[in-house]
Image 1 (cartoon, rainbow, N blue to C red):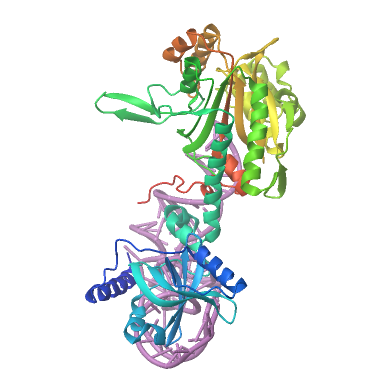
Image 2 (image 1 turned 180 degrees about the horizontal axis):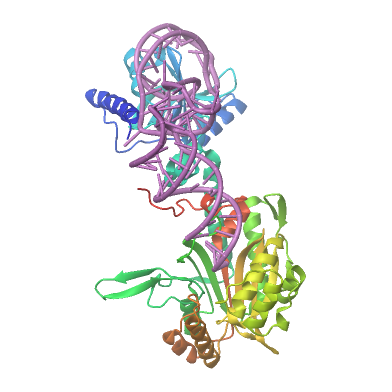
Length: 493
RNA sequence: GAGCCGUUAGCUCAGUUGGCAGAGCACUUGACUUUUAAUCAAGGUGUCAUGGGUCCGAAUCCCAUACGGCUCACCA
C-alpha cells in the first residue's frame, strides 16, 4: 500500500530468502512440540518443588512477540494459545553461525525451539534454547506491542490481529464457546434431541422479520434464509420427537447496531406436553447452569450492575409493567386507533402504520425493557404480536407467552404453542391482513405447515434463546461486535 | 434511514491563529553474554480517508463521498 509497508515486507522477504539460501524451508510442513507453553512452565514448577527431578529437554512453539538482542545473548518472548514464555538464546550455546542467523527472525515469525526450562534472576520462566526452527516467516509487521490494536474498525476487519495482540479478546471467545458447549450438555442431559432444519426455506416463517432472499439456480426459484427455526421444529414435534432443540444461525434483513447483527445464533426448544410455565423453569435452570459452569458463580457483573441468576426470577405481567412505567393500560384501548391516540397524548410519537400489537411492543421496549436488569419474565402478550401462540384461557386478547429479560435486554421468548389448526389458519389470515395494511414483517401463511398441524400436534411448549445476548451478559460485553468474531461491516472501497 | 463525532507513518497518538509533516513503538546499522515496555548511538519512513472548492499558501476553513463510532428509528 505505502512504500513503508512495502519496505518492511521487502526486508522480511529478503530474510526469508536467506533461509532458503541456507537450504532451510521457511514454511516447513510440520514440527513436533513436546509441550505447550503452559505445560512447559508447569514442568518448571515441578522441577523446582522436586529437586531430584532432572531437567529434560523439551520443545515448544509459538509466535515471536518481542525480541531483545543484547549482543552475544538474545531474549525473545513467544506466545502460543496457552500462554507466553521467554526464550534465552546464547551464542556460546548455539554456536556463532546458528546464533548469527537470529538476525533473520522477526517479531511475528512462528518458531519452534528446544532446550531446558529455568528461571532467570528476576524469576521469569525461560527456555534456554539449544536449537530453533523457523516454522513460518511473517512478512508484515504486527500492531504495536504495548497498546495493541485499538482501532475498532481494524479489530473487526482483521480480527486475527486483534486476537494476536489483545489477550483478553481470546477469553471472550473461549467463554462463548464454553457457553454453547455447556448449553448443549444441559439440553442433552435433559433428554432433548439436537436436530438440524433447513436454512434455505421456500417461505420465511416463525418470526416477524424481513428475510434475505437468495436464488437456487437449477430449481430456478428464490429461497429465503431462515428467520427462525420454529415451523420446522414443530413439524418434528408433530412427527413424534417429543423433545427437540436446534442451535443455529438465523438471518434477519434489518439494521446493524450494537444489539443487532444480520446473522445471529439462536437456540429454539420444543417440548411436547410442556407449556410456557414449564419453559420458565427450564430457562431459569439453564441460565443458572451456564453461569455456574462458565463463571463458577451465580452472578455476573454487567456494566455497573450485578445480575444474580438464582431462581426464582421475577414473573411480572406485561400489562401491569407497561402501566407502571408508561401510565398506559392497554386493556383500556382495544384497538390500534385508540391506543395510538392515547400514546400521542402522552407525547409518544407513533407510526400510523403500526397495529395494536406493534404499539404494545413499542411501549414494552421503550418503557419497560430498560428497567429489567434483574432476570425477569414478562408474561401474557397481546394476540396480535403472537400468531403462533395459544390463547390465554378466559382472555381472547392475550396469549400464553413470556419474554425473559436481563441486563435490560431480551434474552428469551417462549409460548405455549398454538396447536389448533383452524385457529392457526385464522391467525395467518389475520397476519395477511396486517401485511396488506403495510406491515412487511407480518407472518406469512404457510400451507404446508398448516397441513402438518391438521394431522394433530400435541400440546407443546416452545422457547427461543438469543445466544449472542446471553454471551454478552456472561462476558460483560456491551456490543454484539465484541462477541461475534467477524461482525458484519460494510465492505470497503 | 436521520443527526453528531472521527479518519495524520505498519501500530499508538501529537499537530497552536491557515505558514517547511511530528513523537513513541516497529524497522535498518552499530555497541552490549540474565534482559523483560531492555538500554545507548545513528538512520529511513507519509496519496494527512477520497474528490472538489476558498486562499499567495490547507492536515487545519467550506462542500460532497466512503468507512467507522455514538445517539435515534426498526428489530431479537
